[in-house]
Length: 298
Image 1 (tube, rainbow, N blue to C red):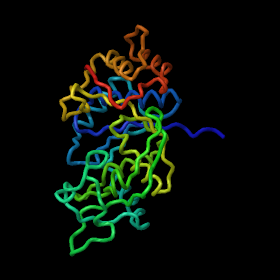
Image 2 (cartoon, rainbow, N blue to C red):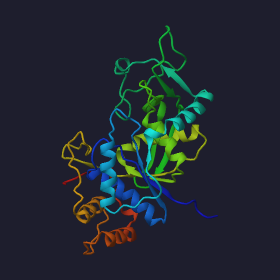
Image 3 (tube, rainbow, N blue to C red):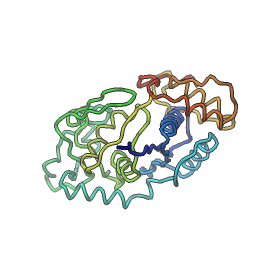
Image 4 (cartoon, one colour):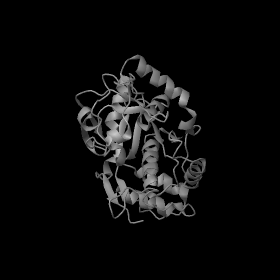
């Protein structure tokens, strides 16, 4: 039987300009898609409208264009997809696997930390809200067993959702759908078969796999690239003052990205089109460094 058509994506959050760490995810996902003769789509993950700006979205797309990325189909914006998320949420609600939670942030802060540093949810409201308290958010029930998946770069990964995370939020107290939920709905709707992204999202993957199962869909293949960090081992981001990428001379930056990943391009070319041809023909995800963090010197 023929293999399913490859469909990958790059899904930045528009909270600032693209930086080196963002480019690692963009380049890795793009090259893996093109090396497989597949499609590569761009999705702007602005579901959290309290943090995202249209100006950042415009800047991101302009930078991608200047670096020679070519995406398939129109750019999708999460902020325009609330009705779709509501339909999927209603499915979970009708199946009785989400429930209202009255816990405040202050209450949750007293809990031990989970695998991602956020408070572990201990199931206080799973059997119903007491004392006439109001629903603040909605949580998805998780199984009391381990979820295991094979990452194409990082290898076998196992997480026990109940012990490491607890029932997690799919609809926030402010009425916005949570990232974990929105990203799975989007990947289902857009037919994503392969996800290549940074290792900072490795801990999120079991939650997303569980959502796929709850929605009766097969999870995609996952590969988590090494995360670019600064000298303090902090993820490069707007919060850690990571500089924006300069788009006036893209080839040197792209060379640095591939060297960072462990697949240097040694051929001497200043042509952006020629560089992409070389990069696509040279791409081998098996050669990517099998590390979750690498310090960036840019």
